[in-house]
Image (cartoon, rainbow, N blue to C red; front, side):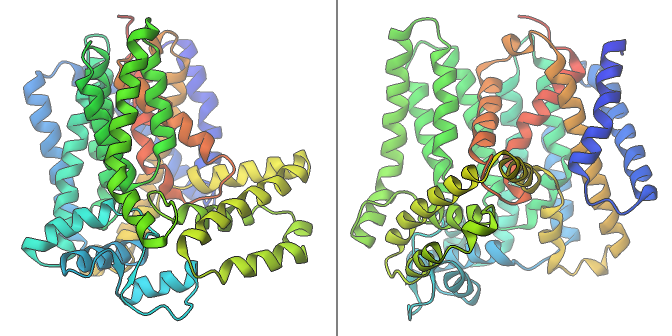
Length: 481
């Protein structure tokens, strides 16, 4: 390790611990976490050159086996029931598989309906567009032949987890970046939160697999003069947006990747092909929603509701208590049409953000820090939901689960620390294939999108491959091509 690298790591340790481990209870726990962090960073530095020397075929077989084995072990060791959003996805999938359509049918979905849309006397089953449908559709495909049991989705998550590490490797690997690609894929294989999420009926696991697939296709498209890979990119991006409606950062990231090509006349038609395929992929569901609500409606209606609720948390007290705003919110809550509610939610979010920015730089700064802390300050949400309703006490003690949380926090902090070192590497960007550039650009676009939207810790789940890529660059000192 060079002196410059040591200075980066030493300077970054306090900042990373403070930023991502703010829930620490005392000096003893801080010491334990710091020791774990040091051990993980040292293990990562030690393993880099050794992993790079493994024969490629043996490495890939071992990588997929490790990813699948850890996830299968977690599913077997921590049997759990689905709660919160995960139970709702299960209910929606069961409704689809039983012929009720994409509709709220169960008790958890009913609670969600009342909380976000208002009851309004809506009888069950209630046809909805509130959530993006992709995760429920995946579950329904499994439930149709096998029956409505969350175990099938858990096993699919095992397969998707193993597939993600292989796709990450394929999307990042070329001669100059082979060692970094191996380490980034290995990091996702053993990333604790990715393992914990396996027994949840969640959108995060399939969406991250779709991102890894987009990274691989972006590398293929970048090395080809043909437009066919851009059709595949558009259709896969549409599938990803049906899992989580993140079309804006995905499209922006792929636009930059495409227009890095030296000839505009070549790049522009390819990107137009991508946009056409993306639109065609989303059109059937958008048409269903438009027919259902009698007005143009996109992928889902939760965007307006979520933005209105979350940006309201940032309002200064004077704006939050404004009678005119309170009256408008009450009218919004009383709306009967879900699509109209969503549109009004976007308008309310714009008013909220206008009030936030008008409250002065000090309030804006506090809001910014709150949003960053909400999204990146903790990494134990998947562990929490994974064990919340489980019978883990039969096989794991509470102390063991607490220890897993500390391991996860150290892994997360160590990844960010090494990512700081990756940012230090000059010329690394020029060495990355288009798949790596896509992951980093998608991270940047999503980061900007959520900069003033308080969220939840699991929102960063699908962004972690980009962090692992930067960390791998920091470890391996990627060469110029």
